[in-house]
Image (cartoon, rainbow, N blue to C red; front, side, top):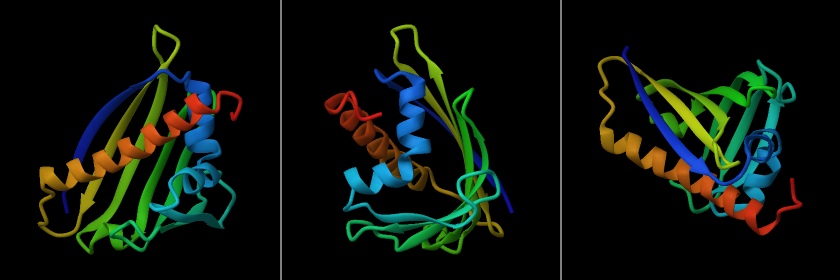
Length: 159
């Protein structure tokens, strides 16, 4: 088993508290609403968003995957940090034990925020993760982030 770590950073005009609330705290409801072709539903099957909770994400018809289960590791509302692992589903392609994501939103000097994400891919056996696979996942995550940003800019009183 190997662990491949990938880091990314995205800048947004939305302040960290508002972006954290929309993406993380209200994301289970908001994301399927604004991206129904990508996400059909997000529901907790154990717990209710606190660490240890497990949620099932059912992808929409526009996705190549059917579902995944995520386990919440940490939710820090004061420091805008969210950590979770993808622990089951076809997105792991029987080649990954899990993927752990740590997302942190920090204030930027212009009043917006910087979203820093560390992704850790835990592979099964001697499977080597290709840069291309990571890039596709990163582009999808960026698309979700930008869709939420566009929604918040178009609906300033929404969150």
